[in-house]
Image 1 (cartoon, each protein chain N blue to C red):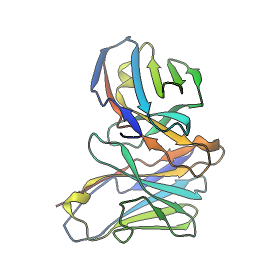
Image 2 (image 1 turned 135 degrees about the vertical axis):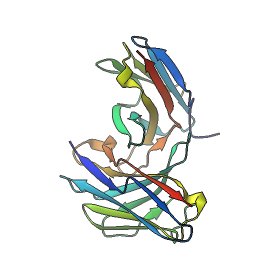
Image 3 (image 1 turned 30 degrees about the vertical axis):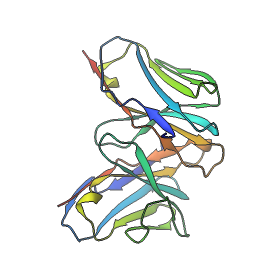
Length: 112
Length: 117
């Protein structure tokens, strides 16, 4: 079993739709949960991060972590064509030198 | 914000030759640099972690003699793919631990697409 599982999609939605992206993980030691956005031929950029369980909201984006289920989600409200990208979840254990473990990424297309 | 400049953005080389990829941190000092490889439709896989002035730590299964990492200064880290083969064709990305962003601050380069023919 991979440490982090993410459905690669692709996912195609109309503009204005609510998008739900998800990852599951197996390592209960993960404490930091991140979502990155990666445009084609570019490096990932950090969208949001959450420490331990709970929700975090930033504008149209909401990140949720359910440690009991080992399940994290990213919701995008009022999706825009500019949101079209690959979204990667990433996780790490506590500690400054701990490495990030990434999901495969979900390719999202928002159609105008 | 913090920027990591990665060059080249793409390179094509002949089998058996070596290729060097550079990552420079602009406006900040990168004491730790991470090197990843990403195959199509696959996760970013960590290859190695380098700390300025010391030897890199390689992940299991990554050949340190094939993927040479040099982190000689606080603003420059290089990855050299030696004796490249077609199976080394991939997207290589560096990432620097970004100061002032706690334990989640990582700034990524824009990646290098390597094609070995």
